[in-house]
View 1 (cartoon, helix red, strand yellow):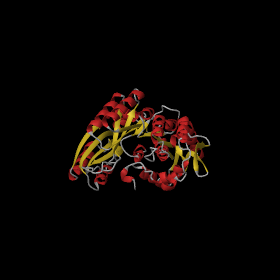
View 2 (cartoon, rainbow, N blue to C red):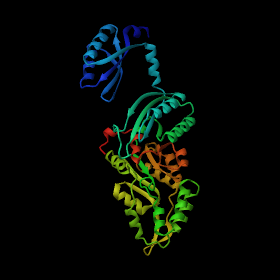
View 3 (cartoon, helix red, strand yellow):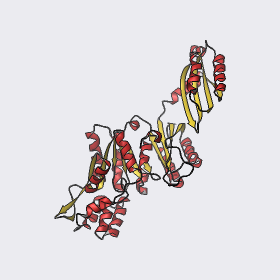
Length: 410
């Protein structure tokens, strides 16, 4: 260790000022003349102003004084402010050891981001033993005034450490989300997070705004009673399979031609089309696993180009609905089984699957997937799902995957 100390010096150079082409090339050109090794480098730009940090290992034979003098002179020419900080070898070794700690990603998303929101989140992470290493904006640059009310804002925080109490931290984040109208996602930053392959969606109130069974019930004149059963089932107050049988029984005698009429008035949730198109461009497989009905799932499949659809089948005889469901009912447990089946067919790990849903019957598949997201869900579902999106559209899923708006063609 004594030889290493004698052979080199470690200096942290922090530079800031207006960005311009050629800054990095000019600075590295100076350092290359002295055979300087770059141990670490990071650059960020905010409103055309850069902040550049370079951790340098300077051979003792070259002397740090000459290197820093030339670097300072070059920075002055570039109109950059510069500050040098010596780093001991012991401090550097301790920093290297810190990289062995677990890495996490916290994603903050909503219609806007405020200092108050970041302050609350940073306080919680610090209290639970996590250190913020990096902050990146994933959303596009925000206009000063949003006339549509459909703006999106997202920051991604890279964290290191081990949460002191993961459950207490999640509860704190959930409280902040509810109080400050934002979503907070906390994930381990591992190999699987960057290598998802399959995205599975619930249909009703997830890909589309409507609950189709309620739309059909209105056509059959049983709208209010069926809607009440639907709400109770989605909140987890009723067994899904039994509630589905009760609701479908109210449709007995309904003309099957009504199905097409209902299908034509279904509307996609905000961001659904953009999300699906982006996933397709990037080569992801997409699937619908729904406790709704296959007629409408296939309608969406044609409209959006979804790869696979699993949903319940309404029994139709002589052009009329019988009030029965054909085959096995797709309830919560069956959803999880079908998700596992799709992963097995595609020869991928469950950790590489993303599942999105809103109801209590989605919880089994949300829990099984590597990334399970409750989308504009009931409180019971939000509390039990690992991640939730409640403030923006379905394309917010892209942020939880680490995707940047600037790189998204859609």
